[in-house]
Length: 402
Ligand SMILES: *[C@@H]1O[C@H](CO)[C@@H](O)[C@H](O)[C@H]1NC(C)=O
Ligand SMILES: *[C@@H]1O[C@H](CO)[C@@H](O)[C@H](O)[C@H]1NC(C)=O
Ligand SMILES: *[C@@H]1O[C@H](CO)[C@@H](O)[C@H](O)[C@H]1NC(C)=O
Ligand SMILES: *[C@@H]1O[C@H](CO)[C@@H](O)[C@H](O)[C@H]1NC(C)=O
Image (cartoon, rainbow, N blue to C red; front, side, top):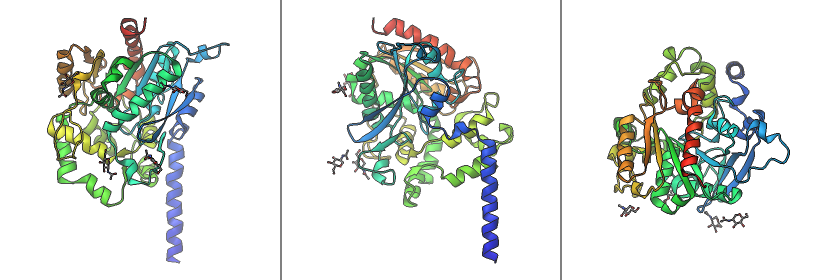
């Protein structure tokens, strides 16, 4: 009897949480990226590419804007191609989730660009020829492998499908880390890139050294979690439902315990906080590997943009930033606590020394612009993305194929 009551109680609770979820969350939370793009009225293509080391990646292409694509005889051939690469916990969806008026991918497509959205191994649009995601070997990677294998494979795919000689690269956070790794390890890819726009570049991270030391050295988080059988950094569906349904993202961010924690890491910006989108983002968040955290941690702790080599406490071997031979623009957020201005300035100095710094500047005038605002600010369209499209156009005119 007690058992039955308990089960009833559990079912009731779960039911409540589930009802809450459907009440709170919009359908965008569970739609695939191709579904989102098609629903927004844009043409969508899926392209599959396999990396040298056996990871299969699905890329998402928006070959035209909403109006153009409806015209007869439309062809994307010879258009200006842009590759956009996401950050940690992200996917191709991060550049469409804010909708046609605000998201970078749509704004670029409407301006006549051939937009390619990349995916990095580990997220829902990736798999492996031999390992499932239940195999620990699947998760044996960080942004080193993104830069050495994933991004080059995606660049080659674009050049092959479009037959354009070069592509513009826009990276956000870890999408920029991956770019610098690619150029360090495979400098021949300089010839395939027009120019690089780095949103919140994650290369130097000394500002988060205390956080890294606590998580990796004091708490030994990755080792403990691996020992518990947790193969990747991810939230189970139950925890997710609990967070979204009852604990988090319900009221003002000032009163929200979950947002207080997030803000401690990325910087506080209540004005640009969008409650509806935050719950959607949480539901759409992708897993990270423990190695991601360890490798970023090694960089934060050593103060060097170092490769992984023999592990977290092993040898420090800097990636070669002087191998970057394309013009780079660095954009920082005025209140980004994760990829801080000072750290980005250090990178700017190095690029400046090799003559590859096209520019370094705040992403926008808004002083509280934080790390997440680059993708998800309430006004990301007017603050960042519309001016960015204009800027990308000037880069194409200056450096693009003539
Ligand atoms: C996948 O498995 C096949 C057969 O065992 C092997 O030949 C191949 O090298 C493996 N590929 C990768 C990337 O692990
Ligand atoms: C992970 O990959 C590295 C090479 O990048 C290899 O040396 C190591 O043995 C791999 N570890 C596991 C557990 O597969
Ligand atoms: C481009 O794709 C075609 C058709 O899939 C393939 O035969 C060719 O080898 C590819 N070329 C390059 C340079 O990858
Ligand atoms: C970095 O690459 C440049 C060529 O771009 C080379 O001259 C230099 O020796 C490399 N530095 C290191 C430390 O490998």
